[in-house]
Length: 86
Image (cartoon, rainbow, N blue to C red):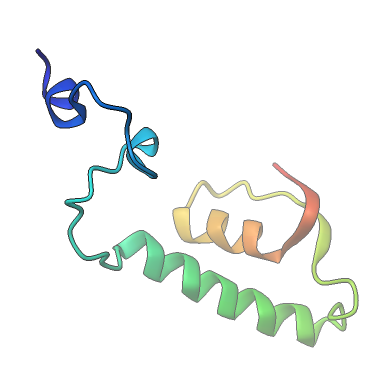
């Protein structure tokens, strides 16, 4: 029997088990990626306000060609819902 099957047993699973949760999760912790994303959102909000795009809640298209992770995150944060990022 594999490890997951052993944890689930033969009885129907409870809420969350189907999503890979076993009820024994450790406390959530903030990763480096989480911190970078939060910082990108802060910087994007500043740039959007400076550009007078607050009413639009971002830009329609973002082209990020540097390949730098931080720049990519900033580009996504600048884009409004449904925008095109490339």
